[in-house]
Image (cartoon, rainbow, N blue to C red):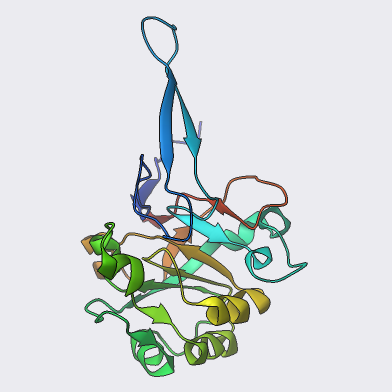
Amino acid sequence: RVPFSPMRLLDLSQPLFDDAPNCPAHPRPSFRRTGDHPQGGWRMEEIAMATHTGSHCDAPLHKIPGGKSITELPLETFAGPAHIADLRGLAPDTRIGPDLLARALPGKIRGEIVLLATGWGAKRARTDEWLHHSPMVDAAGSHWLIAQGVRGIGIDHYTIGDAETHTLLLGAGIWVVEELNFPAEVFALPQPVKFWSLPLNWPGCSGAFCRPVIELA
């Protein structure tokens, strides 16, 4: 018998709950209990929210007409080596461009995943600052990431950037994972880390919830 060695995972997801902070252009998340003990004999919940709520993956179809949906991307592409760019301390409205990215990332990241840790995951709240003034990747930063040949990019906020940023990254076939949360211990891990963000099996959808994790040795 092969001995069982339990996998150790570090959770990078943001919790979802009734009225959780989210993109102000989307409906607010709603959780409603539809059954409970002891009367019904079962506890169940009904949820209503956009597919791009909480920790989720964007597929090209999110911004590119005729682009691939979330289930048309190979599941394996959402798991692999990832480099964490430590960008904590960025001021509100900072645009993340080539200079910031080049300083925070190694020279060779082709075929790998990039995770942008801005520190704004810890600010998650329904405040004007978090909703409207987060750091974002700009067009120049998008072009730089495309040129580096990354296959996926994540950020600890509900959006990686504006419409142009989404069009550039998703149009280049780079999937995006948004609403990450970086515990302090991730910054002591050797790079690259083993990252997983498997989206739910929702055929035809432009994105899907995921549970992003780092596999620890």
